[in-house]
Image 1 (cartoon, rainbow, N blue to C red):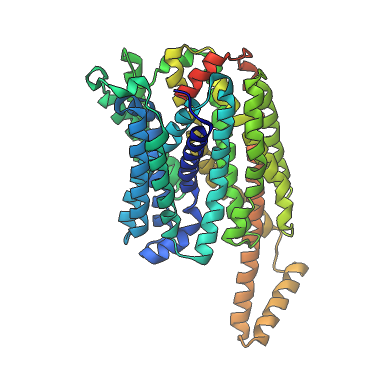
Image 2 (image 1 turned 180 degrees about the vertical axis):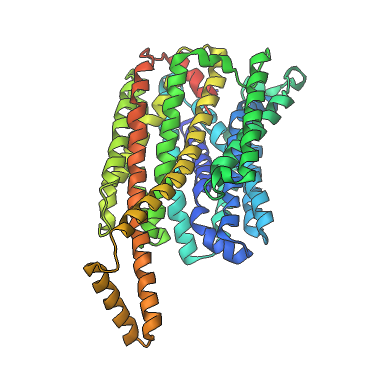
Length: 524
């Protein structure tokens, strides 16, 4: 049945907003950890479990959404996921203990992972084959906008209200999304009379995937905080991740109808696409992670200002997404856009590393524009590129793998950035301290000036001297962190430079309208 322009518009708004809502909740809580920990009587490290629980649930559910949509019917599964996400948001805000908050965040992540996955498929079905690439652009706008809005909105709420509001704001949007989905989304013919008995449920595969990928996500989220393999817990979860993933791979290779057809990895184009998707996830999530931390920790930005600093990237990506989708729909090769996107991300890392402690807030606009534009040029083309050379029956597995790999790339990005910055901080601090001696004229002048200032304010000479040295040490720490964060941005550029040769492995064959339609149907 042909949709009217109004019905198509409502579906676009519903699905894009649902995806944005899910993506906002991956980052909105980051700037509220201090307030949450104080309110619930926990440390910030313990409160960060609310972030970890959501991420683990997301990465488990994403590869399973294709199967769950087939088993329960896509529309039913989508509406159920919206309801789960909305109720969990309410309960997160109502939590009176950290245990409750972590539990409801995990449930929220289960519902949220399906929102992102199924929204894209439903959106694509609302467009004719020749406009599927345009639909990709519209959905890509949501993917870019969500991570940008999260820190900004979270910062504003923390600065002006209380932390439960970061969850309560999902409720009206969730109610509207569920209503519009029920009213306007049309069931596909195969959803009307589903024969569940004919659909094999691979419980072993589901459990091994959940254990393997969930444990891996835990290691990536908590590794740096727990000193990596010095922690018995990290070692245990690393072993569990390896065993779970090996069992899952073995299971999928031996089943006649697997959850995910891993045999498609014989396709070199798909391997190259997944490597590039991993790097893209690494750069996007790694950059969005370290930027707000750096500008708050070193440059004195408020949470709101830190969030707003990411907005320029989203603003430039918004018009680019539909433009790129339109160009791909008219026959432009996705590889062209991927190359441009990688160059822009390399420039993002390089220009960001040129920051100085006295830069203005406006200085970061250009590096953030490079990041936003780079994301726009890479995201949708790689989804389309991954499908080239796959049979129709393999499309679902190919797209699921690509999306999971991109998500894991983001997790690796945050984990590696945490570790790398800690290492570089120690290096830079040692270098700075090595240049300071007891007889150094600049050190003596600074220490004397601080000591006299503190004595003038009523401190005794001993305490004033001790406090002056503490102030100098804090200043060294601040400079060391700043240099480490700049090294982190350079590391992003290095990753993208190293991944450039894999672009040569991509197939240059253009997709016809029928294949684009199939991608649209299976994309998550």
